[in-house]
Every structure is written in C-alpha cells, then in structure tokens.
Image (cartoon, rainbow, N blue to C red; front, top):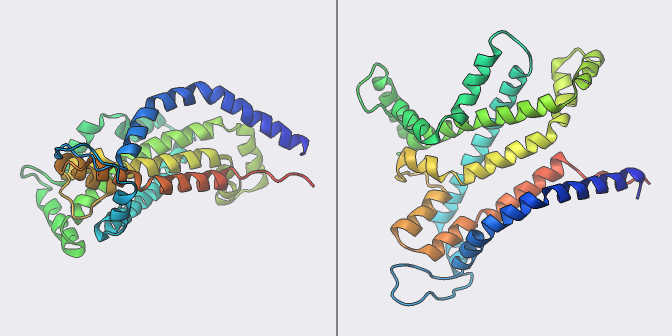
Length: 297
C-alpha cells in the first residue's frame, strides 16, 4: 500500500474514533425502538386481538409484495422523494452560490431563504394549507379554486393535495440544503476559487470542474438527508391532507394500518420495506461522491 493510502486509512480510523461517542449515543437511543419494530414486523401484534402475539416470520412482507396497493404507494413515494430531492438540491445550490458572494442586502436575502426551515413546521404547514386552500373568500381564492379544479381534472382527484405536499417539501427543504451547501462553500479555501478564476473565464466551467468536485461530500449529505426526510415525511403529508390522499405514500399507509386498523405487525413491516432501498442509495451516494482512491502500482 502506498504512503498516501496508509495516511488516508489513518485519517479514516481517527474519524471513526472521534465519532464513536456520538455513534454510541445514537445506537443507544435507536437500538430499542428499531429492534422492537423489527421484531414486531415478524409477528401479528394487534391490540384488537384477544390472544398473545404469534410469530409469523416474513409473512407480512410477502403479503405486501403481492399487493398492488403497496407497489402503487411505493412508486408514489419514490417519485415524490426523487422530484423533491432534485428540486431542493437545484434550488439549494442556486441559493448557496448566490449567498456566497457579498452584495448589498445579503443578510436580508439569507434571512428570507433560511426562514422557511427555521420557522416552526406546525405553523408553516397551516399557513401553507390556507394559502393553497383558502378557508375564507379572499382576492385570490377564486384563482386557487380554479387551479385546484384544473390539476385534479388533469391528474385525478387528490392531485392538488399531493402537489401541495410536494411544493411545501421543496419550499421548506431547499432552505436547509442552501444553508448546508453555503457552509460547504465557506469551508473551501478561497485561494482555490481564485486559481480557478485565473485558469478559466467561463463561470460554468469553473462551477463544473472546481465547485462541484469540492462540494461532493456536502452534496452527498444533502441528497441523503433530502431522500430520508421525503421517505419519512408523514407529518407534512398528514397535516396537509389528513391522510385522505388518492396518491398514497408508505408513511400514511403504515400509519393507517397501525392507528386505524390496529395491525402493528403489518404496519411495522410496511415501514421497514424501504430501508434496503435507502441503504442502497446511501451506499451509491458515498461511492459516487467519495470513491476509494486507487493504490499506486
């Protein structure tokens, strides 16, 4: 192994050593609920059953894989996560590049961009719902009603409600991605951007060859956080639609099974079905944005 490879291995070991207290705390906090959910997914646990819970193995998983409703919910969830993640990443990167340069009024622009994420989600979602679905007659209420009619007529009932969830996720999440990427840009030595400016006068070329490679770790983290928040976006979907949505997502489907139908076992299995997909995405992201260095021959 080359000297550079050994040095990188030592850096990785040191990083894991420094992260070990946080990892230990995280595992301690999550070990019980995750373990309980995993075990419950292998049983028929239900408060509506008089007898004790029975071990059913992977029967809950097999049942979902054979249901068309599950695959429809999974497809909607994946599309929802992909669309919102791409939009949040594009907007967040644009906001970060805008705020990276000094200009008059930058503090106010930063506040306007950061406020959607910093503001309490419960208040934001109510204001967002009233904006898209005015409870009283206002100047723009007829326009919003007509827009809802057009969207539902084109894509089916509930499409406007689902669109409102997508827009809210993008509006709130893009501000967080912007702050994250701005922190990444500020962590890059300015000398690198100055050298890039001397090498090329094309802004696009500097962005493609310098900015994006230097921001790869932050981009990977932003994409993963965006995907996980979208897959687990039960609260916003529930508050904006009260669960009555024609375009179901895995989170609301699992909530209905557990809370309304009392099927804790199947609901746990349903909520865990996308874990392999998330782990695969996480692995691909870090392999893409932080590939292992080839050893020198």
